[in-house]
Amino acid sequence: MAKLSLASLFLIGCMATTTTLAAVYALPPKGDAVIGSNQVAEVKKDDSLSMVAERNDAGYYELLEANPDLDPLHLKEGTQVLIPHQIILPNAPREGIVINLAELRLYYYPPGVNKVITYPVGIGRIGDQWQTPTGELTIVEKQKDPEWHVPQSVLDDMIKRGKVMPEVIPAGPNNPLGAYMMRMSNEDYLIHGTDHAYVVGRRTTAGCISLYPEDIAPLFSMIPLNTKVTIVNQPFKAGWLNGQLYFEAHRPLREERFRYRGHYDNLWNEALKSATAKRAASVNWNAVQILVKNETGVAEVVGTVATQSAAS
Image 1: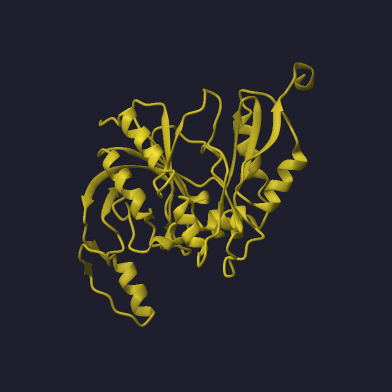
Image 2: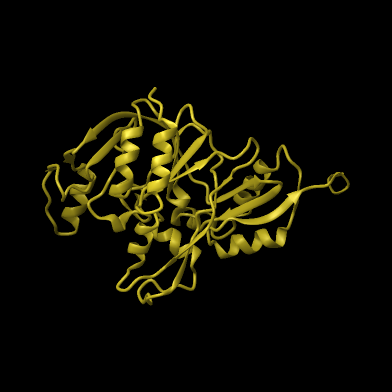
């Protein structure tokens, strides 16, 4: 399996300060799970929220969650936008690619280095036939400048909309797959770029995972065939950093909102239970409830390591 050099990781991290290339973080110490730090971006003249998101390597929905008072249709120049880049790693093996559907974010753990690289992604839109599946897959094919062989489900959907599209779209600037494609072992699903950057951080695909053009290029170059891909759906995450317990609550996907009808106690309790299984915590349950209610996706401290007397 190919290894990414520390020099390459350093260069990617440096470029992330001026382009949409992803952030590179050192993995936290064993037992901890929080990386990064929050940032603030300023709206420029004629900005859309999608433009702010792309410029800061964030997702559209991610910024809507983190900035609930922001009106995306009437952005004012100079407005401060919170970029929630302090992140709790998903509860999944730190190996290969991990995608958390609920936060529309991909994590890559390069082999042989103590790093994680993270990118915002677009996922499958609402509807049973479009949902991105969870589970464990592998990368089985890589193509630069791919043709898009349009799935029959997409062709049928376009016909219902009164539109006709070709069965094959050639490589080029109008290809929805962008310039790079990686096929997963469930062959209907790809990780790819896009010809429209605004779709990243939203639910717009037919089940595939889409990345900003500036993000898919370095990811494509780093990923060897047979890389493991773990896809999870974790709207609630909990993890430690320096003796403090953090909790992060995203708005569950619409299917989950319908299924649970707002009663997510089992989901967020499971996240906290997993995080505190080996380290007892003194938890501020009121703070947890507020985060669950607000669904901002911003990681906040909700507890500390329990003292011996508190734990007994």
